[in-house]
Length: 74
Image (cartoon, rainbow, N blue to C red; front, side, top):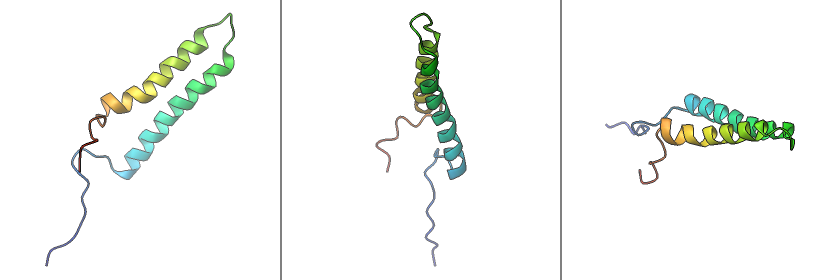
């Protein structure tokens, strides 16, 4: 008899690491939105922080974690 076990494809994260990565990236994204509450016409730094955190929240999962090219996988 053969066991029918489903195994995650190589390179995919398990559930706990996926939840942790999601939480960290969401914190970066929400931090970027929160930084806009300090924005004034005389102080451009909150906008710079917003753009930096926003870019990191999308750049890290797509490049460092390497899952941006997985659309064609089965």
